[in-house]
Length: 536
Image 1 (cartoon, helix red, strand yellow):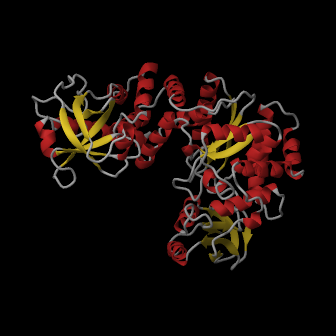
Image 2 (cartoon, helix red, strand yellow; image 1 turned 90 degrees about the horizontal axis):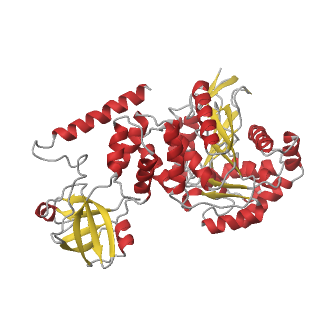
Image 3 (spheres, rainbow, N blue to C red; image 1 turned 30 degrees about the horizontal axis):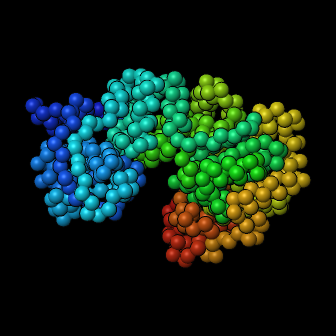
């Protein structure tokens, strides 16, 4: 709450500063631009392809002289017309003619693609109103409740790139400083899932799971999907790539098979095998959510209402009926206290009930990594060892997956849940199902011995005898990333000792793997001042 108050104070001060810069006889361009009359006078300009992509917003660049001539300012909207095609875009201003000469208009890749433009094309422009959703964003900044229609309009504008990055940032900030109500969160969830593709499956139940994250390893999805699918249940799992961790589930699955598919192909895989593990970013499921997350990542904030809406919207988009939510909790994880975890648990349950979903939330121990391998190839090897019942399998990962699978089976009405889970693992049925899924996803890696690990390695050994009292998740993740994960699939860390383990002086605690000597050197340099293990 302290951080939220500070952030709200910062936002409001920023708004006041922006208003003070506007002369008394001028209208504020940012917040009071809703009564513009669209100019009837048109201006002809020549297209210059800037060969730059924004990743979302539709942006063009005008020469300063042209902008002044037609009274156009930074962040104003204009309509560009080429033939019968029209697109509304945000304006940036070039201060010199070097980037965009007078008489030209610089277009970013999203605009080029939308209007099918080429260098030298002649287009006409007119001034346009700003999106009405800006008024609704200002309303949320004033700590007022938003209606279904207003939330739907904001999400529509986000999906169709009608908001600039600044405007989208204000929406994220507004929801962070002025928390949405349960009803607002539910409406945001529905709006996010509505404005995107959906996977429609004529099956019941359709199972899904999600982990709040923040723990290295924790590749429960890659074990749960084959177990659940082998039991005859349907589990269409979309997963993410890493942003700040050594590997996302999609990064790890990519070691074994392809993860980028269309909705149509994803459905074919699920109908054939009962499950899949694909990258959500290759699909158009809840696209507004991805844009919101990018802003949150930059600001390093996590608005509670958007976290809830994000998870539930994506589950709603794949027709999930039974959803298991895992909330790992520790001082170094995303959710830092049991109190915070229980509060989030109740919110998930309330929203799930309103959306007519069966929700089960479990709160798990997030004090240390889950599994021994940290990094795509090392994690994939752990998963296959576990499914093949190899003696080298990580037993902590197995224990957690058995617990989660049993909870899923219980929700789905399957009796003797834990024994059923162990039978699927020990009989080899889960491993056989994983091979089916890998093959269906155009993969050919079925054996852990096929997986290549970084050939350069460095062992970290205990400096004294004692008991492992702490493993720093943040430092473990940082070491693995410096070594090259997740871009270098074979890079990462393999752990030998866990919390509570006895260690002797000189015993190996973990090994760092890299695919180049240089990356390994970077990791060793980092290790000089950063200790991942505390032994007492």
